[in-house]
Length: 229
Length: 395
Ligand SMILES: Nc1ncnc2c1ncn2[C@@H]1O[C@H](COP(=O)(O)OP(=O)(O)O)[C@@H](O)[C@H]1O
Ligand SMILES: [Mg+2]
Image (cartoon, rainbow over all chains, first blue to last red; front, side, top):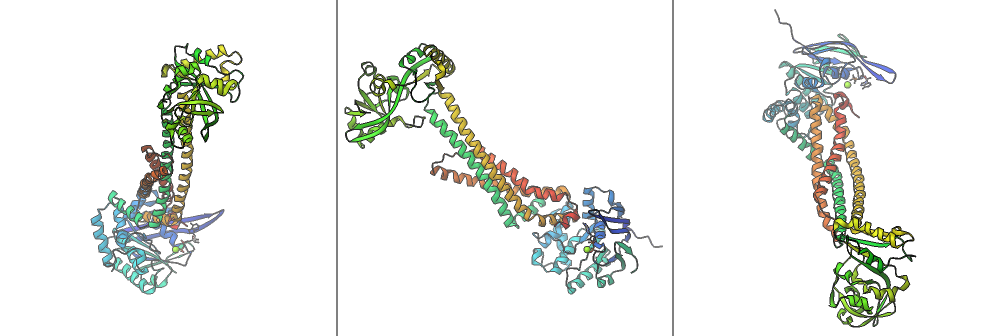
């Protein structure tokens, strides 16, 4: 008998409403989503469909208007601010479309940062960060600042920063949106390899080609989630 | 995050952001140096007042008519004699002052002349450098003799001061024999110097120079500092008794101690005014700092969003930005104090009394660290309150 897989994301009935003056904008409409350990899932939808909003809630950067969300068994919506910071630091690796690297820090310092916020010793953090960057082919670029790196290289630094702390979950919001096709392919291959090594990954995209390369695909339109197109 | 790592991160941010660091530091430098210099100038002014008055005996009381010009019921030599009856008064002598033209050979000068009793000389440290002092006998016999101040003697003789002793000069057209030249005493504290004046015995001046216009002041010396107030009371009752018309009210009685206090007070209020100017400068430079901060606030707010997304706690972010602001303000403050120290001798060169002081350093540093930290830290403090998403999306 197969042991049931651990449920990393268990979100139900998520609603997000933005108040625009007297007008209510329902960006997420009763979204329920489960992601299991080892999943490689893509959420596909057109621009403005609510993808980023969903991702930000799953990544604990934002809170839903109503709904429930358990991350790795923890009730996210009752967590304090400091507990949320801890969750973001240890359980989630977030990859932004625009990379969001700190401009004044080197690639190595950027990747070390989540470990330092954990209170890890500098030497240990540096060894881990160096290892991840080398793994992603940036062993020669450790001392470069973001503006000295190409878009593809910056995205690999951002991926290294997301995975360096061994989080339960990798979330990527349109990770290929700012990349040329060659770099996009590289990035997708990296995600595939990471998933093969056991990482749970959720990618958000409006790119059908990207969506083709994942194990599980869901669709989002006008704030509603669909299993089939 | 461990403190050492936090400091490294801050150091990287400061050194990697040279323009912002420079502009912010500049604002703090200007503010600190201004405060420091204002305190230096204020203290210099106070010291100047104290020095001027150090020549003045604080037990001295001056009695003079309350109004300028001709007075119906002037003070007389007799008043001075009556004051001496008080046990609180050691010395009292009348003094006349006038302005006139003084001629010697071909030279003439317009100068102050004074009619004085012999005691005047001792109580003002005047002694004959050449010749002899005015003596009691000159007073009693109404000898038409004169003493000249060192500077006036030089003016009248074109530098050969000694030749004037034993010669005749004319004061306002009257002849006097010069019996001596006083030593140099410098500024007397009232803004004019005895070195530029001529002196004749009191009785002589009263008779020949001022006549009915004689309107003396009386210099009184209390027996001690603690008897000054009692002496003033005695003077008042004597005046009330002997000047029926308006009593003591028509005269002004000033003691050197309160004049010193008044001068110190005005020097101090000048300092306060300068300080107010400095605070304005500091606020203006603080707003400058804040502007620099706001230019980068969008960038930094996004940065704070990123830091939160990778797990930084609010307190850690606040610490980071606070320490950064403190470092920048302290460095700027210290440079500002150094700039101040360098400027003080320059001010002195331009004859502006300025004294570098510890209180200037402390006040300058305090004010600039407070404004530097407030204006530097405020934007980060606002940003740290945003949710990670709000910070990331900040426009
Ligand atoms: N802070 C906000 N206030 C108001 N409306 C917002 C806000 N954030 C997003 N929206 C709206 O929500 C909708 C979904 O946005 P988003 O989740 O970013 O879409 P996607 O990532 O799929 O392009 C859009 O119509 C957008 O204008
Ligand atoms: Mg989006």
